[in-house]
Amino acid sequence: MFEGAGARVWDPDGNEFIDCSMGLTSVSIGHGYEPGGASRWPPRRLQGTNFQRPAVLELEAAERFLATVAAGDMVKFAKNGSSVTTAAVKLSRAYTGRTRVAVCREHSFFSFDDWFIVTTPCNRGIPEQTRSLTVGFSLQRHRIRGEALFADSRS
Image (cartoon, rainbow, N blue to C red; front, side):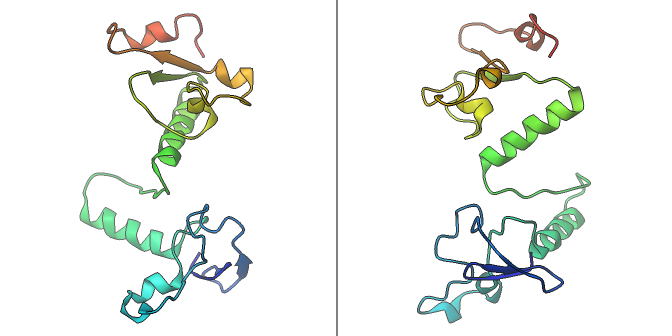
């Protein structure tokens, strides 16, 4: 996306869309909201922020980042840590062909997605198939090798 105003967004070719997710719910008053004193804001802010689809600004920032930092070939920006962690889980599953995820019980929060929430008290409504794909382990009680978590399955 290139620009947004209220609930509408435009891509670099000028095509107009309604942003039904409003930046994945983070833009509750619309893109480019202009309260009193908006003239003091950077002009880019008034074009809209936090689009659901990749934005031209993201591409520009990624190119600038890669030109500055000599470590990496690609950059992907995300909305929050849950999205990044779930993306890492999906990437790992795609790369390894395995489906199970190991979650350290001492960490309080990894993601709002089903693969993690199934390990919390708020797990109602998550299918049993999803529950069987998440394995918990404790660093406090014992140090184990990663293979031991998946000993009963190569998935």
